[in-house]
Amino acid sequence: MTDRFKELVLIGILICLLIIALKPAPQLSVNQPQIPGPGDSVIQLAENRIAIIETNNNSGAYGTILVFDYDIKTNSFKLLGRYDYSDYFRNPNLQKPILSPIK
Image (cartoon, rainbow, N blue to C red; front, side, top):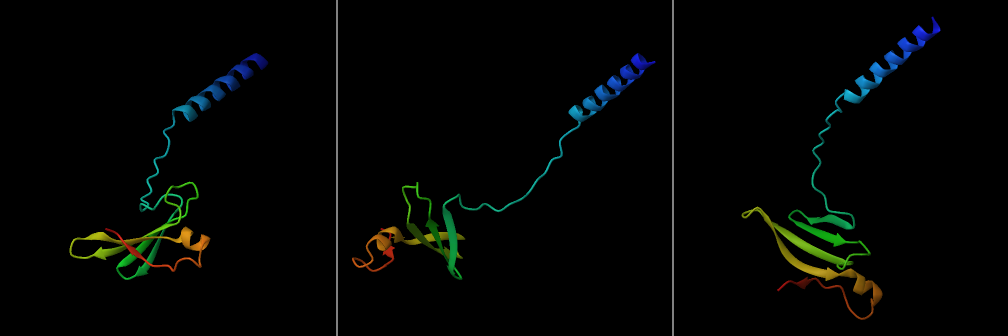
């Protein structure tokens, strides 16, 4: 009787394992907006103006602020200028923060 009972229990465990192994995984779909990578921050400065700030220490562009204006007619962003705030914080007496135009 005990051998028959053990055999039934093992068959039951095998059937449960097969059901678990063959069960399809749930499909989760999450629609998240595209955001800047780690080390990038986007800040809204005005109604149609944003700034992207690079704060990743290992980036070659660390300390760079890019300022963009949104053009409603073309439905795109226009680069206004770039500023390196890390230079200003290293030597605040040498320069005043001025938005340098892109040429």
